[in-house]
Length: 334
Image (tube, rainbow, N blue to C red):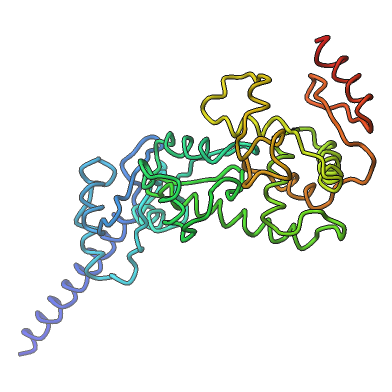
């Protein structure tokens, strides 16, 4: 009897040793470096489950011991990451556990998309459609249909998207980037409008957005924005037409080929500020924060005219005679 007990005890000890050894070996396989020798991109497909990802990683030669990861799912399901769709960069020397942590982390591979200040909404949509890693949900839709998807049905899109560099990852949609840009513009416009000057001619945030788009299209020189805003403010106060060329160009649409003729200046469009009184009905571009700030805080002064000098800046004049002389100097003699 004693001999039997000793044998049973030995068997138990051996079994426990085997289990412990097996457990240690299993853990060592999870801690072992993955089977890559250089940085590798791996994409977690949208909707993919843990076992599908493990199978793909085995098929791509990234991991070798699929059994270790399948046992992990059975014994430690609470330790499994919530996989995120998108691309991740896997590095040599990472362990299997570190790989899993990476696939459930925020460390997605991102790509920049720059929307410059002064671009139109059409140009922004073209850039989105050309972004190769984006999911193109708005392709083929009209501007009105896009705005409806953004819960802004009936709103003209021009001006309502903040120009900036946005980061996106594979699996994101163009609609998500549009939502980001639209939220940024609405928040920025609210902030800027709250700090507006007391004696503005414009009366609403939307009018500030329109004015900022005119300023954005007129100059890229930071020191000129408030002075151009001041010129527009004084012209509106005196009942003078704004007579700003970018509105003519915007009204021409795709017909614009690089030149404005006298006939173009006389053409009656809703945007031609040589013909209409006041501001155009909508913005003509996507203004940045600096243009928005200038629109709500014009520089006081007496200037009523300005003309491009050809170097990116303008000559400002108080009288029509002075302005005509400046036109002769900078335009006709160029």
